[in-house]
Amino acid sequence: MTTETDTQDVAAEAEEEKQKLNLEVQVTEPSACLRHVTVTVSKEDVKRYFDEAFSDLMPKAAVPGFRSGRAPRKLVESKFRSEVEDQVKGSLLMDSMGQIADEQEFSAISEPDFDFEAIELPEDGPLTFEFNLEVRPEFETPNWKGLELERPTREFSKEDIDQHLEDLLSNRAAVTPCDEPAGKRDYVVANIAFSLDGQTITSLEEQTIRVLPILSFPDGQIDGFDDLIEGAKAGDKKTTKITISFEAPNADLQGKEVDVEFEILEVKRLVLPKLDEATLASLGDFETEGDLRDVIKADLERRLAYQQRQSIRNQITKLLTEAADWDLPPDLLRRQSRRELERAILELRSVGYREDEIRAYENELRRNSQESTKRALHEHFILEQIADDENLEADPDDYDNEIMLIAAQSNEPPRRIRARLEKRGQMDALRNQIVERKVISMITEAAKFNDVDFELNRNETDAIDHYICGQSEDVIPEAKHDEDQGTVKSPTDRT
Image (cartoon, rainbow, N blue to C red):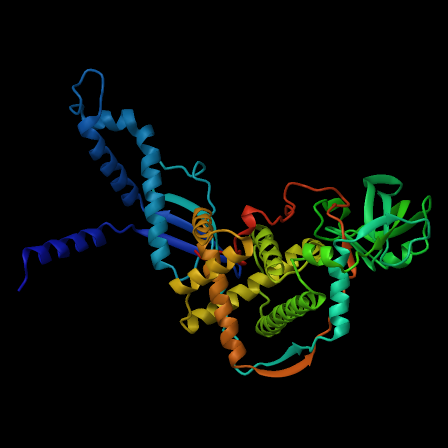
């Protein structure tokens, strides 16, 4: 039996279908992740939208010489066409984009890129507009079952703990002037000048530098720095060269070899504090050296667990992305580079890496931001496709657990973390991190492992946050552990 309500529903559906736009859509593929879309809206649809807009306007149109709503239709259309155009254009564009999203098979990862003001409605005829759209690439899901992987393992020795304890104490050590020549792992205070063809590019004054094998900058690094400076004393000048990264903000200097001069002003030496009651208290209210060593061992084991996860993930993604040779839009790479940097830094902080170690890694990422971001996006798209194939998704408990973890790391209430994530539109990024972790876990469970020794490397890099060739507006800002760092970023937000 057909009711009156059923009849009305059918009529409404028929009316909705009848009102569907007559669109001609042409899609080209400049690259795997980019679609160029040209849309033509029929002349009849443009006229229909204008008719509807003027029909809505007629009852309230005020025209001199006529009572409100009583002016002839043609006069109203002539007088108010320019005012109605933006409304009609906006409605046509919005409805066209909605219909295209329903009918096209590609999965967008960004908003359409078009200039609203540049689109003009014709006096008579169809409306044509075009835009670029970033999309998820189309590819065959790589085989992920039964991968053969290596798992780093290590039993931490007394010597490992001694070395980590020395590094920990060095953060509270006194750095005192020394009359002797600089030795490896000492400190020097120096003026640094960077020049090309005798012209100074940038300089630093009274910079305190640790004499380690590598001196790192965001746009270049000096290898063998300890060999260069060893034996230097106040008044000496040491020179070397540095190659500017191809990711440097100054395109004119990318890949150039630049002269570097160090004017040694002072040599300083590290004097470690005695491991007495006061030092134990300052390190965390430890009662005995044994208690401190137990915590250090736990810290080393936490780092090992992190390195295991990273190593396994890197091996998995390397195998999965071997055939991922599709190009990525430069704009997408630029947008995601900062997120990738902040995500990596947050992970390092969460497992207890020191700020000097993080700065060194940060500079390395900045020098290779395009390449590392490209790799991260390839990984993301492949892991996302596997998640779709296996119906893996983030559930409410996953969000709660992740937010609790972030809150513990940043020492903030979970409600504040959630509110910030929602306000900044970062819940999609959190979802991506959860899903990618689930995919990696699933692949790990199906993998075959061979245990290998984990090398516990001492920090060999001193990092200086100074762009040799000067910093521009589009350079990734220094990532600080402040309010913004209480968030988790993922390679790309899902749309």
